[in-house]
Amino acid sequence: MDAKTEKSNLIEGATGAWEMVIGLEVHAQVSSESKLFSGASTEFGGEPNSHVSLVDAAMPGMLPVINEGCIAQAIRTGLGLKAQINLTSVFDRKNYFYPDLPQGYQISQFKDPIVGEGEVIVDLLSGERVIVGIERLHLEQDAGKSLHDQHPQFSYVDLNRSGVALMEIVSRPDIRSSEQARAYVSKVRTILRYLGTCDGNMEEGSLRADVNVSVRRPGEELGTRCEIKNVNSIRFIGQAIEYEARRQIEILEDGGKIDQQTRLFDAKTGETRAMRSKEEAHDYRYFPDPDLLPLELSQEFVDGIAASLPELPDEKRARFIADYGLTPYDADVLVAERESVDYFEAVAKGRDAKQAANWVINELFGRLNKEGVNVVDSPVSADQLGSIVDLIKANTISGKIAKDVFDIAWTEGGDPAEIVEARGLKQVTDTGAIKKAVDDVIAANPEKVEQAKEKPAMVGWFVGQVMKATQGKASPQAVNELLKAKLGI
Amino acid sequence: MSVDRATVHRIASLARLAITEEEAEQLEKELSGIFDWVAQLDELDTSAVEPMTRVAAMTMRLRKDEVTDGFYADDIVKNAPKVDDHYFVVPKIIE
Image (cartoon, rainbow over all chains, first blue to last red):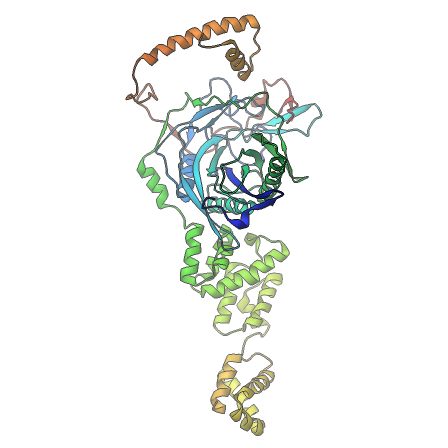
């Protein structure tokens, strides 16, 4: 067994335990205005073939000119993945024919990618931590889009996506379960979104993954792998792996052997199936693109990007735990989405971070989840929630009343301080008024006072009486303290 | 010959070229001739020579990330044999 083998991840087959070995190629669309080698727009959803230049349509004589912004984004991503940045990299042609690939080749990076080895720390819900190695990240062109449901005899091709920059992030086969694979893709997505290098929108295809799965007896040599192409949701990645691993185990246990194959995941059935077998194995005949010189970058260019990196999820998580005393679980929940963490940090700024975290996670996220609302559309803004936390801190309202105020702010809106004022929700902290109520209760109950001196727990009865006299708006804490002083307990 | 008949057919099929057996025979000779000629370079020891990546002392020109092109779908599909609603229309791709 190697270091990554965990008993809990093994699958029990009919003839003993099996281990999955998984590697992922994540294709992330670079956030940029224009394409990798042309000035056409990358915007999603344009009219067919409107975001296409003569370069993207591969008209004869057109020459690619590389987009500096895309290079910077790839380096930024490499730095975020704690990876080696290669100051010299080369663009190659990957040759194949397909109707949505007008050039007849994809410009990609084969031997000399822009980013080399790195790593991603993946924390699972169980508290388990897995380090997934990154083998490389390279830049390449996306292909166009084929539509097959427009006509019974024909396919329709739209080249708007053709030439948009993609980053292919290749992991090492360090992943041992579908849960780890899902957590890994989520983490990569989170990092990309923090960096602003990919919007991570899986529905629009901005992030998709090719999943390599093989199985073996724990500790034995790697088995033959199958590649599941183009899986476009994190849930589907998990389903595809589970199905594929079990399919392979079944074949092996029946004495068969695995054919190395490219497969597709069918979201409707939850199964993987072989793509139509090609007459011969892929032979992409990579060679350096003669239209493009090697890409040479200066260390200063890379250092400039490094200096502008935001705080990343791992660092934020560590800081929340160390400085704010948050639990690892709470820290994970907060850092998972950039928008969530921005919200939390706005609430926590200048306030008790632990209390801010409690309010954001329990009240806000609870309510957002329940009503299916994204944090960016939250009816209660970070300012409003911060103001509620302030009101509690200042003893203006109790924690219980604060939940009512939150509900009012959620459903009706408004400034929490004004809500409290207008609805008379203020805690009575005026010690004069509380003192009077305390004195009245003490004066009216001399026997109870004697009893309380014997039995200090009796103070609870007095608190109740005072609260009743003040219609629940007295600060229970203030009442408690005053009573103890007066009763001498 | 350094390039055999099967290789000729394989290259033709990867390049989507339909060739006759006569053409294959001719290409086998021509390609072998080219390969043998280029193979003469193997006689030199180049292990200590950096591969040449450019003929002029130039580095790659970079472009700013701005939208400067596109928005002429009419022109893009103008030469296409079949078009519908600015889409290229091609024989059904079965996968």
